[in-house]
Image (cartoon, rainbow, N blue to C red; front, side):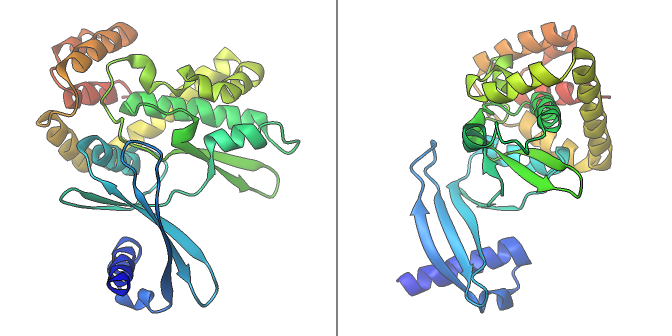
Length: 274
């Protein structure tokens, strides 16, 4: 049974990473299959190792739900990141997103002498804006990673979401703004210390312009997602009514009050970046 399971797991990895090319399986073996007890889905985490060079990779097997799948697709199309995943019936296969977990980064590296606080604070402002515009909720430090890329002069930071099950679900505006989670206080304090209100508004405008560009580049794909979301029930009605009131107040736009589901709310939210 174990041999058959491992062979099937390697086949899934080949589909996820190499378009189904089974030749990549030749030098791979399954090192571990862990049950992750955190979160609400308790996914399996698979560790795949290349026996030639001992290089390893991970991927996850999770229960598929509508919010998570919509969130992954919107991440792929609207963020600066690309992500690979597969869905079959009630099963979701998701690639590992590399980076230092946000809570670990703030615990171990936030005071590092080589940290560039301005660049990191700027990236948090842009991440905050991305989450709010596309209504991705619950982005506290356990649900994102920080990808650190040293350059020849400076260090670059990219904050990446790793959990998408709160895509367009909650009814409170603050849930879609990472700045309101106490777990993110270390990043928030960097922004308060190193970024002026004028600079913050400029970074927000820059990120909205990039989102607008991605919307135009993937117009048909995003419209198809929004149509599916508009025909789906992904959140209770009370969440929709509560969120539409808060967004209408925030944007001073009564069009939000005509929305009856989360798909419509997301469509109007995305219209605000144009």
